[in-house]
Image (tube, rainbow, N blue to C red; front, side, top):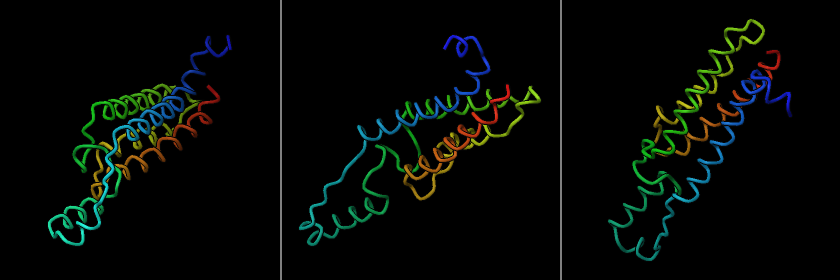
Length: 151
């Protein structure tokens, strides 16, 4: 343990993966506590045409999503988590690039993953872009741990 704390290279190696997992846990918790669940009144759905149109529009985007605008993340917490992750990925890439033994592009994969939910809006369901982004983030962070082991 003492060796881990005294070596800044070990921190550089693991910080991206640890931050990625922590931010994923925070985002999942946020979505669980702030999701919107629609209870459809199926009797009213059969009778009322305007209610049917509203329900169809909601169900087109999925039953669960983050409150607010469906086509963009408007939560300060989520934007902050993703932005800090992007900056951290860029910083790790910069630090790794200066050492010939650890020169790797894998932190850029994490950077792309953190930017996907902020930039790509897709069909309106922000959860899809979060899932795709975190696939890139976790994969890039895992590969970064292996690539930076020589530092």
